[in-house]
Length: 261
Length: 185
Image 1 (spheres, rainbow over the protein chains, first blue to last red):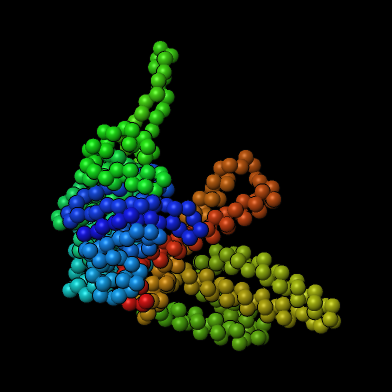
Image 2 (cartoon, each protein chain N blue to C red):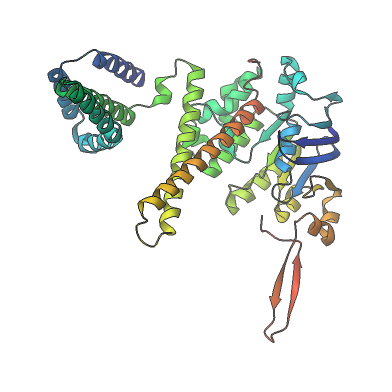
């Protein structure tokens, strides 16, 4: 579906963020992208969504090279934007319509899908936003905005869903709801970035782990990655701390699994 | 419809007021506006005075000084200037209280996008500014001196500017991701 070959990226006048990253996303796969703060997870999602251009290597979507010039071709852009949806870490970035109903209907309307208003109502109900249909998006809480951003993207029926730290603004109950909701989606490929290993175990089968130097450290089964303490330590996904016993002795603990994201 | 009408009335009022030069008329209109605003008058008047105080005092003093040096009269000009600015500010604040700007510009989808984005940003920055102020207060034992307050305000302004730039970039990407610019390029 999407293939990255030796993809590198740097912001203008900045250091290289991603270095020679290669992997392929297959249909209906659930993949988690793990990595420490600032290792390039969000940039990688934006590259896959065609929002940034790689400074090296190539990204292919269904065998075709993805580039700014290709995305300027309306038919290709329409096809790509329908198939690939991204929910940003700050959902505010995606919300610009006057009401929740218009916000959800915006994508289907532009894609020429039938009855965008009915589609919007249906997705608002599924994401428990129906009472806000006439409300401006900026008046919603953080969690509601997150749900709205998700509704906006899902209403376009994408085949690949990119989620950037989807639980960053959510409380535990909403996080649980989101996990159930995503697991219920059929035929959807998901790539989720997170530092939260317990969330990763719930959302992914396959893990991609980015190192702090911007290189891909691991691509394989998530379960195997989570038992490899050395790998997690190198990726800055495990932490160690001093543990003092009652008798005064002490040793260091390394925690690889945990809910600290 | 009501919002669009309010916005139109306000626009006409703003243009009309700039053509009125008689302080008596301006004073009469200001009195009428104060009376019509009802219970909101004290709050709106206080806000309007705070909003214009610094600039109006500076401009008025500057004019008084230059006119005095040239031996020209300045009273009428200063009165007219202050009445007009106060009236316009008061009307704008009153409008902001009663107008749903998003609905008022629903004749243009593009304009509505701009207004929604601006309002969203304003809300985010209001929250951020409150956080900055509280954080500053929580780190200060007593009332900080003027230099410290000025330094803090400068840092806050810098941080807000940086945040605004980052957010604008992110909004641009968010809109592109949803195909907003696809038929505009």
